[in-house]
Image (cartoon, rainbow, N blue to C red; front, side, top):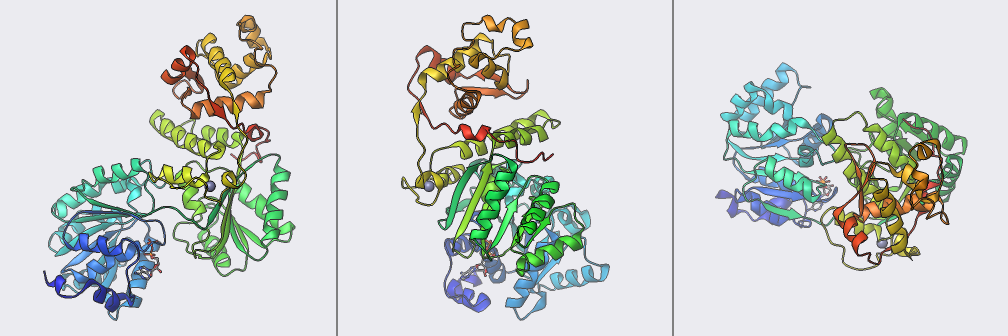
Amino acid sequence: MAVAKVSLLDALHEHFGFDSFKGNQEKIIKNILSGKDTFVIMPTGGGKSLCYQLPALMSPGVALIVSPLIALMKNQVDLIRSYSSKDNVAHFLNSTLTKAQIKKVRSDLTSGKTKMLYVAPETLTKQENIDFFKELEISFIAVDEAHCISEWGHDFRPEYRRLREMIEMINPELPIIALTATATPKVQSDIVKNLELRTPEIFISSFNRPNLYYEIRAKRKKDLVIKDIVKFIHQHKGKSGIIYTLNRKTTEELADMLVANGIKSVAYHAGLDSTTRAGRQDMFLHEDVEVIVATIAFGMGIDKPDVRFVIHYNIPKSLENYYQETGRSGRDGLEGICLCFYSYKDVQKLEHLMRDKPLSEREMGAQLINETVAYAESSVCRRKVILHYFGEKYEGENCGKCDNCLHPKEKIEVKNRAFIVLKAIQQLEERFGTDYVVNIITGQSNPQITTFQHDKLEVFGEGKEFDAHFWNSLIRQMMLEGLIEKDIEEYGLLKITAKGNKFIKKPFSIWFSLNHQFDESDGGGEDE
Ligand code: ADP
Ligand code: ZN
């Protein structure tokens, strides 16, 4: 191939002015240039774009780059053009172009001037475009933000699922490079299967963000949480930060509260019109405000390198979201503090939001939520849990940069108490939820309990020396341990798992750190 004559490093220097490759870039680029399918998993800021841009510039024909967001597409194209002397080296094709603009793009493509064409997945579904692409010389297809393919990812887009079908129509032989900044093992296998990647070479960079500090704080009364947040921000005066909340109303309330406390702050959510949103985003980027209080609507494509803290007022609905959102701090490699206020009430709120969804979605959602609960209530190094979630092993015992490593929690042996929980569930024939089971264990009678004569059960009141918070926490940790589970179909009924039955037959020693303060919250705002 003509490509081999120029060294990769020379090409890098010529096109981008960089002197060396970052991380896996060189290996990835070689793999693409050899025409093989490639899968790149690299955290944000790792330099993914260059992995397809350089080979696109070096290969005959044009590379098609599938990207989910029209706004990002334009930024990317502008950026490439700023590196190159020729404007037509990169184009995008989407619904925002006029007829005349489309004509120009097509003529640049036909004449072979364009090396990169950014397309939205919708563009590929149009037959006229497919017919046009069929006639072009295409070097390869890059699928950016490939996690959008998977329902297990944090940003599922159904149209991404049809990409393979479109590629088949254009040219089934085309090499594919899939790229994403986030992929759990489950999402990874979804991507490989769905795009039908042919024995792809997979390049995974570490997800560890060593400069980020992770901490979970118990979320108690709302005014206390706000006091806590205000105090924290005052301690970091003049620094940029993001606060994430679950709903729109809370963003406004919190922002007002911060302003009242002398902190320059605005709210941001999808309910605001686009001009207001863009204005507030700019205020944040230009540091006219210190803190932006936002829903998940804020973030995609925002690249402010010196965000010094991310506070979660509510626990997000998956660890993936948590990683992405906390990941917006410390992009410059300097300090990034990630605080999350956690209460089990917020988890119930997340569960409640899913109540009308179809069963399969509810099951999936419940599993994702359980993983965040496990994270929040765990006494293991936070970094270790996060990296484990992304299929990566954190070597080392103590990261020195998370609350659990800096302030290890006390643990107690709970074999006998776990046994009481299992006995109660068993005697209730697995037909009741947590609250009911806890009432039985603590011996709290109510009309329903007396009607069913459950106050006559042997286990009734057997655990009354501990309060309901204790038992709630224990039950959650037993769920995380896999001894019991919540039935999703019959919403919330506690069931004993195979492991739990084994435990009943032959109890073994278990140690739990009991975080019962997570139950003491008033919910911290009644966000729906
Ligand atoms: P990602 O898409 O993975 O978030 P980008 O492609 O936006 O990352 O790259 C992040 C930054 O790193 C960009 O500013 C880019 O110009 C820079 N960069 C990429 N590759 C190199 C390199 N080999 N040397 C120096 N800087 C690089
Ligand atoms: Zn740690």
